[in-house]
Amino acid sequence: MHDLRCALPAIRSAGMTLRDILIHPDPRLRTVTKPVGEITDDIRRLADDMLETMYDAPGIGLAAPQIGVMSRVLVMDAVKEEGAAPRPMALINPEVIWSSEETNVYEEGCLSIPEQYAEVTRPAEVKVRWTGLDGKAVEEQFEGLWATCVQHEIDHLNGKLFIDYLRPLKRQMITRKMQKLKREMARGEG
Ligand code: K2U
Ligand code: ZN
Image (cartoon, rainbow, N blue to C red; front, side, top):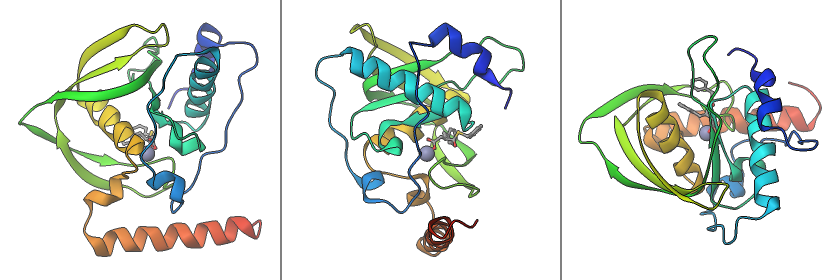
């Protein structure tokens, strides 16, 4: 993942903050988040912090509950062409209003479930409606990695993780690995 910190000045607000990413299992990752009411400067700062945290991870998406904020906010930038201009996006109260019959299989990961990857099948294209940081309603149809990413992030807003699409045994194995990782992190190892 090319370092996009050069892109940050374009979307920087005064002093963004890197936030800690919660690791599964954590009840906050299993909570259905609340819609955002008014789009305030606090929401705009939250989106900035989420983008900075996402680029730093690095990742191509991040949902507010992953940093412990139980609001319906997600950010993403799934631009993967080397040297292409980044396209940082912030979606407030996003909802899928159409999804294609055809599906895509993608080996997904998750910043809240580090180093674990598994194939997930999702609709290949989705149409999403959301409110932008300027308060305006937006609709866009996503395909490819963008479609996978936006569905992965909207799942996060509903307390759903990509491991929920796996067989129970595989999901339990990943959860146990994360519990071990968290024990080691608590002891300052790992
Ligand atoms: O929400 C997150 O945890 C960030 C996810 C988003 C994502 C997962 C699977 C497929 C698409 C997006 C990733 O950890 S971001 C890391 C990454 C980078 C390149 C391609 C796939 C995943
Ligand atoms: Zn995730």
